Every structure is written in structure tokens, then in C-alpha cells.
Amino acid sequence: MAGKPKLHYFNGRGRMECIRWLLAAAGVEFEEKFIEQPEDLDKLRNDGSLMFQQVPMVEIDGMKLVQTRAILNYIATKYNLYGKDMKERALIDMYSEGVEDLGEMIMHLPLCPPDQKDAKIAQIKERTTNRYFPAFEKVLKNHGQDYLVGNKLSKADIHLVELLYYVEELDPSLLANFPLLKQIQLYPPRQGRRVARSWAPVTAQTTLGTIFFGREQPADR
View 1 (cartoon, rainbow, N blue to C red):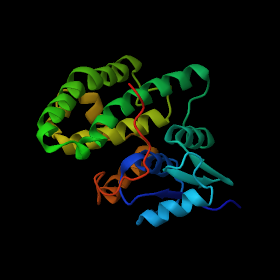
View 2 (cartoon, rainbow, N blue to C red):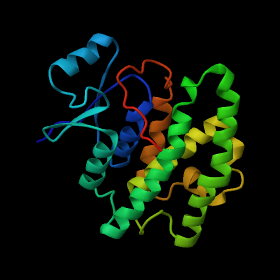
View 3 (cartoon, helix red, strand yellow):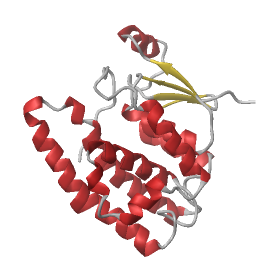
View 4 (cartoon, rainbow, N blue to C red):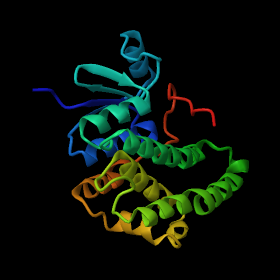
């Protein structure tokens, strides 16, 4: 019998958080091995555990997987959170990429220089209310289901609900004009979302601004 997945990352949200949410939504128990000192990261690098010398890294099914998207796609495929065919997977990827675009902006906010922070927050709020939330609200309205794709939970739903909590932390009023998004956040229709929601308070204990040596760099946009 395979052991629990083991997650190697810092004691904070960062790029591991979406992996935690996805595993929680799938009902999978996992272990965390926090990187608390630079020596911890050096050890992973020196023993060959990090293909590209950076985390997150997840030990699962005899593999040491790195690169966030690769890890997410493997977990989603393994636990049937990745659609039923190529068309559904394309939509799931498209929506997940949109979530990531806005999530990257929020994730990097703690690293923003103080004199640029107000402008960055204003930009995030503008993109949230004028670009990303209207798009996802329209998808839910046109689809007419509890989910973004098909009629079952996918990784796109989990990523979106996670994002909604981050936006709510930034400014709860940003959700005011998006009733369908508020509905999936507050009244998750299936057990998967309830499990994922329960993870949020646990990982909110520390923020992105803790230690971030060796993290993946954001993709070029």
C-alpha cells in the first residue's frame, strides 16, 4: 500500500497551497516536511531530489515531482478531477490558467516594495472586478451547473474557490457583484468543496513573506 504523499515546502502558502487544496478536495491525507533553514533546502538539492533545484516538491507514487502544474495535473488525473475528455481538460486548463494569473498578482503582493503597494492593490482590484470575476461569473451562468466544467468537481473549481478566499482577505467587497461566485464559495454543493474550504484557516497561519529562497519564478506573461 502506497504511503501518504509527502510535501516539501516552506511553512507558508506560496506555490504549495494549491496542491494542498487539491489533495484535501480529493480526500487524500498527506504529510508536510517544512523547509525551515537554508540547510534543509541544500540537502534536498544535494541528494538529487529537486530536478530544477527548487520547490515545491511532492513525493507521491514513488516519484519526486517538481513544477507546480505538473504536480497539480498528476493529482487531478489520479483522483478524477481533470474532466472526462480532451475538451473538458482544455476548459479546465483554461480556467485554471485564468485563476493562476490573478492568484500570482495576489501571491506576490507581500513582496511588493512599500512605495508600490497601494498601486499594486489598486491594479489587483481593477483586474478582479473588470476582468477575472466577470469572466468566471459568465461561465457559471452560461453553464448552468454547480461546476465550471461538466457536471462534477474538477481542479478548476478547487483553484477558483481558493482564489475567492484570497480575494476576500484582500477586500470582501470585491465579491459583492458576483452572486454565483459568492454561492460557490459560501455554499459548496459537494463534499469536495467542503473539504477544500476546511483547509483555508490551517494554512493561513503564515504568509508568503516568510522565507522564499529557492521558489519557482513566475511564468512570463
